[in-house]
Image (tube, rainbow, N blue to C red; front, side, top):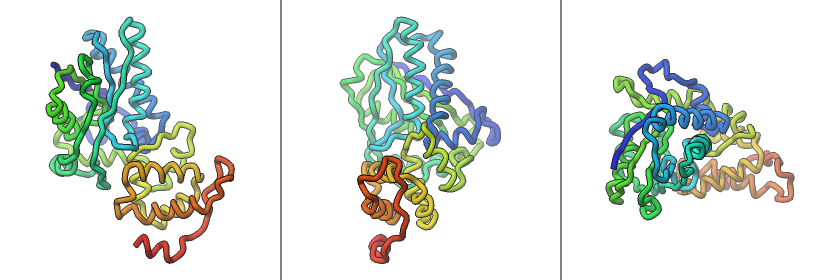
Length: 297
């Protein structure tokens, strides 16, 4: 069993990342075009800097960052990483990639990117990661994530590896890694929100043809102040509102008090929208009845 770590970008300064911070911010909130660019760049970097000199002849399994129901931003990047890697593997006469998932069980509303190393471990330390051990026998595992800041998620992955007794060769792959430990871990939040300053900055991302919904954008919208959220959501299509609502339920966000008022508003607006309307029908404009607001409060 060998374990290696590869990062495409190494962050040494808090104002020079080696990649466009606005692009990274849009990627974290579901810009699929940037996810494509990042995934291809990560694959090319890993191929040229590692695989060419260290070919993997066993079956490769690519595993995106753990999630429950709603994928993370990394999932969209993973898709293009796999496409690019498969092109290279096929050209080498090697087996193309298989995929599987790490399941996680705990849902939280805290913004992980603003926490320090100790707070991150306290937050996710009780989480449980699950994987199909039998499917992985005899294969080489590529665990993908977008950024490595303190290594907390990596430690949780390795804790899972130990718990399952996995003997596979493992490669931890990141688009970027914080190398300078004198920089506070909340630099991740600086990157996450570099271009997205308010809920209204999401409009262009959501309405693009490349939008990929993920946990970050769902949590951000549901946790937004009700007045701003109401204006924003009424300018979205009912299809988007329905997607947002169903994703929220799938991740159990209806059990989180901080999201309750916004979710009730979406539900009542959806019920008020005619089901026979066109696909791109706007969400019905209106206000909640006082009784609904009282129930949410």
